[in-house]
Length: 498
Image (cartoon, rainbow, N blue to C red):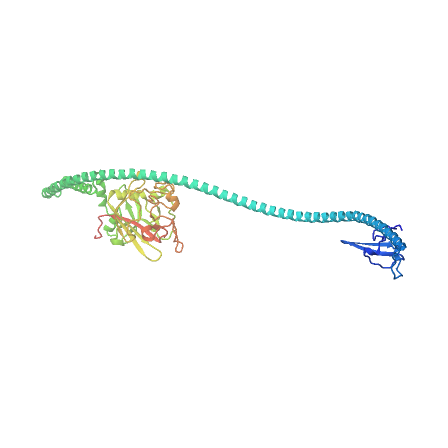
């Protein structure tokens, strides 16, 4: 009996007929049909196969028949069964091919879906990696920017340091040149000092010889004068001619005595001026005349110049001519060269006598210098020099000092002897910094040395750490500004006895 087949739909596959020997599950759907279900992976296939009529026979005869007819019949049934089996086999092969064709499309679709899913996943992973790469690139860019910024800063700092180093090197070279110049100048000055010392020794020797000669001459003249006076007294006291001659002789003796005292015969008129009761050359002369009260007096210098000064008649026996006085700071001491030369201020107040007057005094006679100092804590001290003089304006009022003593420091705070005077408009110090402009006032700065009594005046509470104040280094240090100062001079041979 031929095998009948049915079509397969999208939802299910219609069934084909199989023998019950294949292994099936019969559901009894239609008469003469069986349902077969095949599971292949995720897909399930159901088939409905017709049942052959010949297969429905049953053996009613329990007795086996072994005759020829039975054998022929059995053989025929066997051939039919073989044909049926062959048809079923062919049908199964076709079914297998159909299933494979169907599965190929599903598998291809599944593979495509899997590939798409994997591609999407890979794209997501790539996008994630790309975003991470972008973030890392940004971070690297930021780090690189910071590194470049730091490198640029370091390069700038290195450049600035290099410029500073070059500048310092240039300054060191300039300072070295200045030091070399100062050293050469110092050597020159030392040679000059040696030469001057030699000349001074020669001059002193000459002066001693002249003094001896003058003393011998004075003795002879004194003897002659004594004889003449005796003769004059004997001859006639009323004779006018003899009286005039006597007066001339007395004047000659006075001139000779004054010449011997000063060391030259050119100052003979000075001795006669000293006899006048109304003129005094310094405060020592005022003291000797009987004026023992401190105050302002008029002096007449050897060149007939009159000037008012303050005389201290109390300190260390009196007779001091005050050349500088400061006590409250209301007078400005940051003055010009001409003002320091001629003097400024009032003798009864703060004042500076004048370098020109001091030069004339100290070169007409040997003077000593005393500097009286007071601090803001009530302490006082002094510095005294046994020999003091100023040279002329042509030598920039160069100061000469010898024989230091006193309580305001174990050593002198005035610069080296031979220092020249400097003001804000006349720089004569040994420093390239212009000490007068730097520390204010006029003074013998040398190289901005350890003293300046004409510096800026600072009140109490503001007088510490002041490099430009009233300074006396070896008593109060470089940053302490003093309260009061007084500079005064008197003859080296002064005696307080009247």
